Length: 359
Image (cartoon, rainbow, N blue to C red; front, side, top):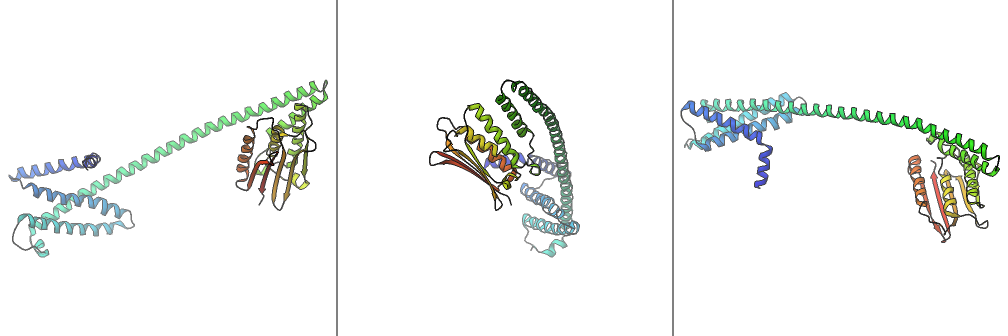
């Protein structure tokens, strides 16, 4: 309890110091001018009443009234009520402290002109003082709002400058990135011209690689510019050809898709990633158990399905990364309109199924 009072005192120390100075000066000056001082209890009770009037007028009457339309009539009426209550309680307090045997009544308050006008003056004094206090609070609030607004404006301006700097950096990186693919393609073209004179298959591999890299780097990814799936299927042929040369083995994959599916505009590099995972993690060297890529478009549902034998001789740690990449890119492109399921089947096959609801 003592700790809470101490904390409250720290917060309200300016008010406490202000009232202490005001009360001390007023009591001292009036007491010295009159030649005598009153009782401590009298001073305490009267100043408690004055302080209640001061803060109730500022925080209840003025603050509440200005938060509503047409405040002035409300303020005048409430101030009159405050003055009336203040005169009543001050007169009743004087009656109790004087200890007279005279009865206390409303008419007696008015007929005692000296006490009535003293109370009226004190009430008006503290109400006017309270109005200046309220104006100070409003000024302080407006200044804080203005400072906050200026600070937010400064932060927004700073943020805009940072965004502009990031945009400039991005533009620079974009322009620099445009140079790198051209350098790559020019190098691959040089290698193709040089290698095909000695080895036609190696030259064809370089050409397929250049075509595959150009597709992955230059294909647009906005929904309005998704390529037709047929373009990616062509690059899948290039990928399989390159994988055959790399492993020096035949890769058995059966394709099953219709012309309707080939003409479907679909986010690029998803199907090719699924096939790449088949080539990397699957066993595709058995002609009697080939891998399968099936694509169909029926009843407003686009489905891509792959299945392959599991290659038990390699570690499949990189497989989930490829699936996570597909899932993130599908989420960005299509939201929650798709499902992606994958996992082993019969302990020897691995299936991946991607379903997209078109409408």
